[in-house]
Image (tube, rainbow, N blue to C red; front, top):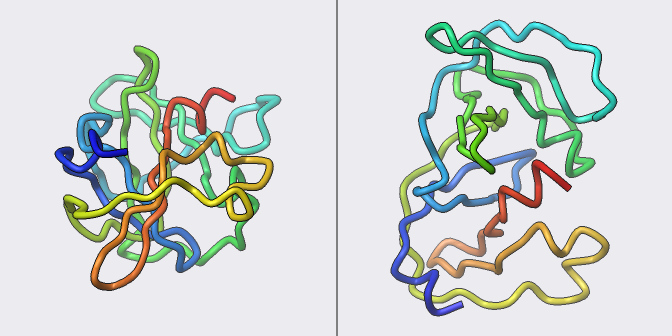
Length: 141
């Protein structure tokens, strides 16, 4: 956990819950744009976008985490990440900030549940806690 303390993270919100990704996993943050639906076996794949001539799949994390879907607003963003040599967009309700944690704790087993492998730990801030995602596992499991 201590090796994560020296790393900056991008904090974001999904259904009023706070999450973060390592900034090194983030390629770009863009405004929500038209997503073309695709026929795919993964229930959480929203579709694809055209990002400067490159087709990027877009994942709906609300569906992935079985969260209540929020209305998309002017704050809704797509975070484009590089995961296993592939660019993938994830829809988030709001990007909050770049953050570096002073304390990161292991994810409690009771909280982790069946999807515990999705989390690297819980970042502690003066405003609360933030779940740190293992984006490769979230997108490819």
